[in-house]
Image (cartoon, rainbow, N blue to C red; front, side):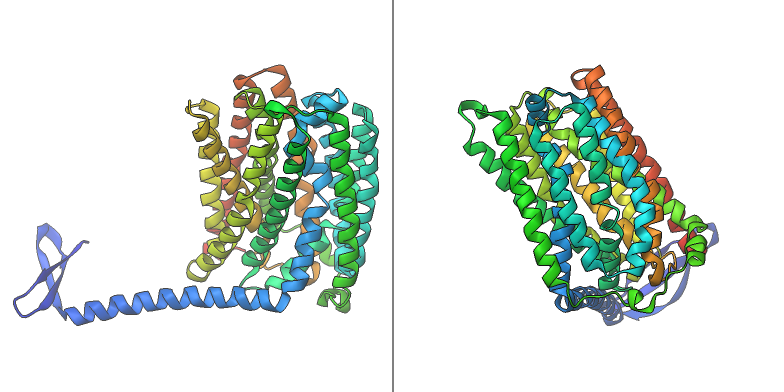
Length: 476
């Protein structure tokens, strides 16, 4: 049925509903002040909801600002050597060490193999032990493993180094970091806390990445040509290793009074872990994460794409990728706040947010596949847009444990289980896309890469929709 209104001479509003046969059934008169009052009430409720969400976020931030800052600092620092450097300087790595995209991809596969084992084994540690010690050990071991990259490594040495990174960055670190942030956020601002974590990590990455690109630029000549590739690359790795050691000291002293309530209660048990592993919703979440992570991993291909296909120099493509990093803190934080606000209004609002991000990300990959833009500025804009929604996905997908009714005492174990599947792209994405880029030079190879990524984004959208429907029908 349809409705329509008709203003009367008296200044009142005649409200009708369409009946059968095209007739209109009058149901009453309402004065304009009723309409205005209803509109005002609706807007006031929306404003109150916005203020409530903002107050929850601000209270969460004030109460846990310093611990969250330290987790952000450590959470990004530990991944700079194995991941940030290749995203910015992969072309420099390949020219310095005499390797190709496939070799880099195989090294990432070594990381994926050891990381998958570490996700499962490390989860229970986060539920049983204080996070401070776990994080410090991870930072120091990663700094030491980075020393292998100062030896102008062969493809084999790079493979070994990344196998070590898979243990040092994940085994004791990953679940501890997610669990601490999960507790800081609480039920009402969990997505916002995760968004703050990933946004803060993105801001740290953007700052450090921009600084590294600036330092490399000071060592380059006319046209962005770098004088000594090996010395430049070694200075990058040395700087980041020292940075990791400094951050480990900050963590040790800064988190000394922080202890998870579940660690105090020793709430973890093997039987509970088995129950979690049988939870169908966790496997849906794993599918969401594997799809989103492919999009995130694809960001590492953009610098090579801009150099090999769009004709940029190594320095120019690295600069463009460092600009992309700045989309992460903004999109991650906004996505987290939006998801929490939507959840207050709509059951499953976090899953709706995931659906939107997956859909827009898939569309951006389609534009890159078809190579529809002749303007380099539009290509770069599409890349930034794609990366922004990849970062938004990362900010949200670990915030849904409350929607899945997972006990706080075994969140670390749950993180380990979904990460085992969700981060499998560390095993296959790099080597497969590297093969495509090397085997099909130019736009063709990258079109295959972008289509492959877009396909996963569509799968992620479907998995998110299933979760949303299960939430709406209370099947969680």
